[in-house]
Amino acid sequence: MPAIVSSDNVNSVFFDGFYKDMWRTLIPGGLTDHEVAFMTQHFQLQAGSRVLDLMCGYGRHSLGLARKGIEVIALDNLSEYIEDVQRTADAEQLPVQAMAADILSFKACGPVDLAICMGNSLNFFDEADVSRILTQVAASLRTGGHLLINSWSLAEIVIPQFKEKNWSYVGDFKFLTDSRYLFHPTRIETESIIIDSEGRSETKRGVDYIYSLSEMQRLLASAGLMLRETYSIPGKKKFALGEPRAYLIAEKV
Image (cartoon, rainbow, N blue to C red; front, side, top):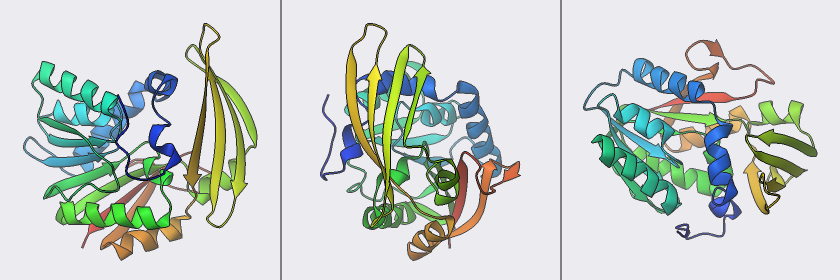
């Protein structure tokens, strides 16, 4: 199935093909369980609460929340992901509305109690596009509602850890990356080669736009969202320089 794209963002098709299968094993199931538990407790979600899951991927958070009776609107630009999410939701009779949509042109779909943007997804967009997304998120949230952003491309994370070349195994896939740290705008451009167990390969190109925590605070504020807290372990450990991931919590004011 094609991606739904109205922009020239190179990341729009990064997660199809081999990466779609690899992504399922890249994120540990236990991490997703902990994130869903945190969302439920910290934001006081209950049956009937409404959540907007932006760039939901294969629906690991959408389905986890819906299994608790929480109503979820799940958006992703790749139809294959959306079909998988809706198929599972229908089979389990879960309150999920899964929609294939270009994240840059989706319309406000509120009021929702919580919006989530996980898996480093917001860093796929430059500053102008991030502002557009955050404006639509704010329009979707009820007053006092929250946005949770998960990122591993904050400047405070990537600068201490940046490597030009890296390779690893993810399940049965060999994953090789060649990265460049560039400026104006600050970003990391990466060419990745994914090789499966039969020796077949795919080449992927992607961009992560790099924002400092202060820049994220400014972008959120411009959309009417106040940054309240940043964790490295949700609800347990506040973010510090060099931590591998960050969870930003903002509130609509």
